[in-house]
Image 1 (cartoon, rainbow, N blue to C red):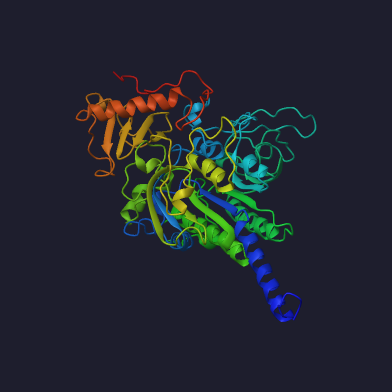
Image 2: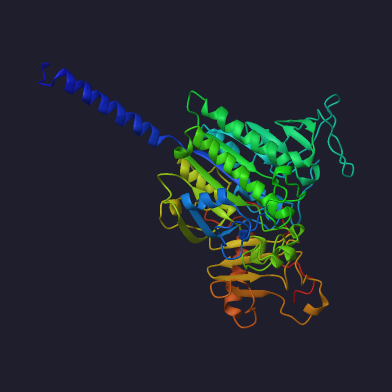
Length: 496
């Protein structure tokens, strides 16, 4: 016995118990690693577990995420095409607030994200995270000649030369490490950090990104100081070029696109396996999503004939204002926080990732950033999302606007606003209403236009859309100036 009446054995037990509790507390309080996997042109119906009755493509690894995590059934990309959505993810801000009012970018120009605008990369870096992007950037950057340091101009489809330097890429927007490419048209130009390192066939890109992602996780696991990491994996698949590797060709029995989806699912499996093998799964938040709906390059009619519905019954596809263009898979796995095999029906947008990371780290977003971002972190805890945003703004490839508020959706377009028929210039639409209004609760396929029968709802949504544009933000906060003064609300010529 010692002087306070505790045996030496008991004292050792107490000390060991205290040490164990303290160690567990440290682990539990440690900032989680974050892995964000973003597919390119993967429709809601392309994931079998999200649409089991109409999806014929096997996606076992993504399905496993749904079993272990939470599905958001009403998640939307910031746009129905690539670049605008990626801008929204990076900044928490709709891209139409910039000079990019329609379409996408093609590289060889200054970064669309201004140098002084906060991104999720530099935000998390400031919170002590090691940050990496492995995949597709598609937000513009420039190339410098490695010898003269002169800007290299874009010449048709010519690739930037090996050795070309990048002065305004992901490394200058908050990422410690970058390995990937700019966009599909220049996929052969492989970039590491700020330099083009090799020209490689497109068919090798998805295997390359898979290997690099796994290598990154393995290396971070060896980090002795326990620094958390943020790994952003914006894949280039199943976007064109649709190039499944030899071992995946023919596996689906449905064609090249389905084969490529299966290979993409295999990449998801490789990443989640690397987390598990390194003992990182328990303290890693994994988000899986897509930048927009399925592209017509997938040969949607042929897939439909085989029983596969890429948009799971939602109308339209990539590029469109209809939900098939921007309602996307969104799955979150976070052990010990997110209850496995759960579903959330709240309306969210990919712009919400910034605010969610902010609440996750307990650090407020920088001033004049994340203007269109609302944290969905409460949903991961089974609680109600506390939103200061009225609704979500949708945007098509041609720059047409739509507004979703509750169950109502107003489209400032006569038709798809994108590639699906009928298109805005179709003469058959001349006698049709100038806009569309749908009850998404009772008509999720957007079949019955209620624009002329509910003028009060139309007025309410239109006023809110105008306000969200005018104030430079859709969330509560200080006024934020749009980058352009004249944002055209109605794109169709004969609006009234």
